[in-house]
Image 1 (spheres, rainbow, N blue to C red):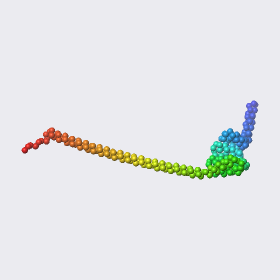
Image 2 (image 1 turned 135 degrees about the vertical axis):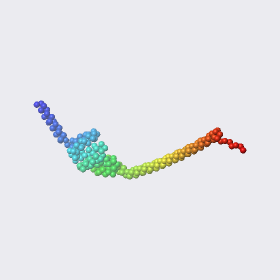
Image 3 (image 1 turned 120 degrees about the vertical axis):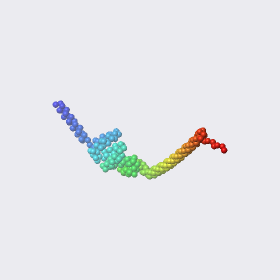
Image 4 (image 1 turned 90 degrees about the horizontal axis):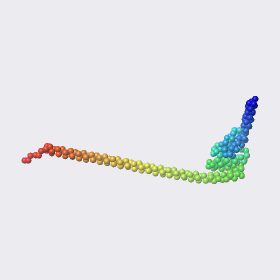
Length: 236
């Protein structure tokens, strides 16, 4: 009997828990996401915001906060998509101003100053009293004005680098040609020396053969003299 009662109580508690989970709204998940965001647990916050959007895809706060959580995780493109979604569902100027401001920050960090200027202007149109946005706008206008000059300098730098590389390659080719020329010269000298050595060797062999032949002739003459084969002619 007691076991049956415990079993029934467990089922009741499980039912209450499931009902509580089923009753959680997008606002509940958004609050959990905000708590995690303030604790700098941005990945955890992202999970909660996505759960909120599953409950309510048109939640402006969930879209905007999810964009912030992604931005802090250095996922700029994904964050931009969430800001664009937030713009479509936002109805208040204050929220629109914040969305456009954050979009401007993303463009500015990517050095897309023209897009950043447009975003900051839209932000100020919805909140003209935001000094931070006004400062960012002025900064981007200055950076955009100086950008062509920077691009020109970069082009000149690249051109100089290319010219230096060409000169270096020419010097390298010239050195290689000189090296090949010296190698050919050394080969010719070695060849000539080899021919000279060969000629000297042949001359030495010829001289030696001649000397040996002379010695042979002398020995033959000596043998003839010793054997008396060369008789003296009679006197008259």
